[in-house]
Length: 348
Image (cartoon, rainbow, N blue to C red; front, side):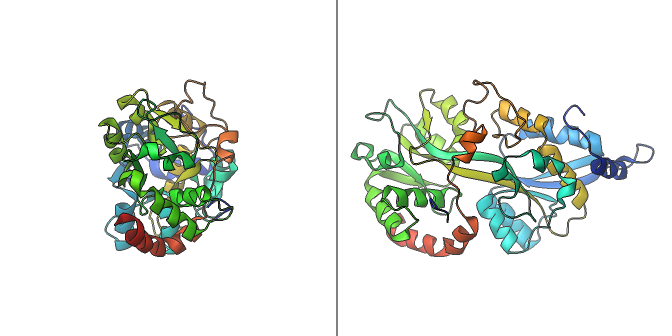
């Protein structure tokens, strides 16, 4: 863990070759199926703005396999899903890499990687896929239900939040990030597991319950069960739609980078086509459309957003480079011990 723990696309020559392979002939050839494993949010947006134009350009039929990180990774482990492209948070993608589930990518087929923020180009190594979006893990709260503004991670330990707080479970994507934040609150310059667990044990009086999914946070927040909690900015738009007075804050100690990655599954029969699709998703046009729709924060450096368009979006080099970043290899090596300790000291 580090200190704190065409209309949419400019076709490159390499991609023209892939397109020619998939759409050559008399135009009546059966489309190639490209299976994409992803989450279930913003399905209509992805279908119309990302998948459909790519299908038309490459004579492809995109088949989507929906589920959470753990479910979809398990399908690949077990060989029960014939997946070509997989979207996963960096926490789960690191597991896939360590288990040899992903193909090494040919970066010459994904030229848009050169147009990404440095942090997104190779978050888990040059051999594997980039981050297609970077969200921020910070704090969401309802100022009408708190005694004052929340500005830091340490504010969550204030007695005024007793019985009004939720935190992510240790098995969630952001669980290790909050554990790192607790170490900071405990005054540690370098991550210290003992200090972090002791700090979270002291917080138990404020916690209503843990949450595993962002939708659980939104539901509790909407119903007034909680007033605050650690939350991912990429879902704040949904939270604010339900509770207009809600606010999102980057803690003074820093927020955390939540990187969602995209990889090619090992032994895919459509590796070059999968790489072409990744390149498509990283294009300025697709990234900009995703950001303006409040679906994903952009990582393409050429995306330009107005102040209003950037609201609720993790946007701009200064913002992204300031985020704390965890070493996911370290996190995965320690996760079993942390989960066991969490169940003994925090959950019960």
